[in-house]
Image 1 (cartoon, rainbow, N blue to C red):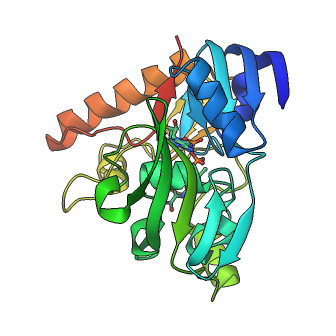
Image 2 (tube, helix red, strand yellow):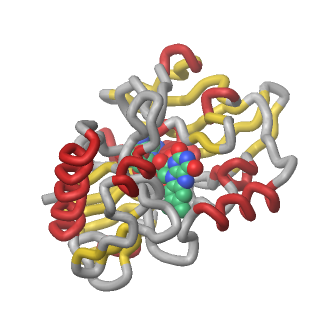
Length: 258
Ligand SMILES: Cc1cc2nc3c(=O)[nH]c(=O)nc-3n(C[C@H](O)[C@H](O)[C@H](O)COP(=O)(O)OP(=O)(O)OC[C@H]3O[C@@H](n4cnc5c(N)ncnc54)[C@H](O)[C@@H]3O)c2cc1C
């Protein structure tokens, strides 16, 4: 198994924000991943880093080498680090993984992963179980299971219009600049981006960060921003939206570290 020591975590977040990790593990089989978790269940696991930013961490597991996709009679089986865009055109242009996608119930263009999911193999407290879709309890950008996804079984791939999905995404998102997609969840019946825009924050800059000119619910890192800077900007956006609309925004993105 590959490992890297004394690593900058910037390159593990699509936003380019991270402190340092003592060691990052890159398991190459589900058994190696399960072994790392058995040794220390508190080791955080990430996939593509497209929805997360980091402070400092002692250890991290990155699943990017667990990327096999196999077609079987039961459906399409993907290891947790397989890229979603190789399976679903609604993920085109986003280097997210099957494991992170299930954890967040990735969705776009009217589809969600739960529409295609049959079951997932989960490591939890030393046991490996196959959980059917209902037991994963997937909701709007959330899941309700405990543990780590090792493999996912999907009914089928959906690759009908990858170029069209990519084009639409390029029109709406600042794809060329470091970002981790939508920062806040859409409140019921409302758009977080529209609320941020109404609060006058589209294009707002703080240190190396900017609320995207293209999509107000996305923050881009134009320079050398730190996790502290991003948390400051998030607090400022929440406060300003609360003052302008009386709506309390909740975070979609994840943060680990200190
Ligand atoms: C340009 C861009 C566009 C985006 N567009 C969308 C979009 O249209 N729709 C959408 O839903 N999201 C979007 N996102 C956000 C992001 O891609 C999703 O949340 C995605 O599901 C995260 O997958 P990941 O592999 O990158 O997870 P990571 O960012 O690595 O991790 C996210 C969370 O999942 C957990 N996790 C990762 N792997 C596992 C595993 N094997 N088992 C258990 N938990 C795990 C992590 O611990 C963390 O809590 C976008 C992001 C970017 C950068």
